[in-house]
Length: 103
Image (cartoon, rainbow, N blue to C red):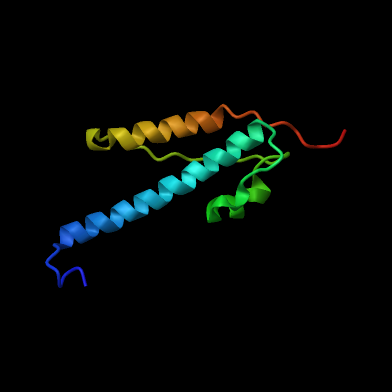
């Protein structure tokens, strides 16, 4: 349909990548909300805000251990994304969760 209205292949590719990037960023924002709620010991942890956090709910918090990999790029054109990724990783790394085990 986009071809019919005269949009180039490059623009179609760009729009698809933009939509994918927006979805990833939204999921990461929801994951950040979960970590913030866990650290602040909120009564409600927003696991159901995204599929990602819903699937990870049994592996976040409590006595579980979570490992996160961050992909970064050495290219100057990707500097903004790399900086945002490192800031997110730093925020997650600074989370100290309380142990929920009964003693």
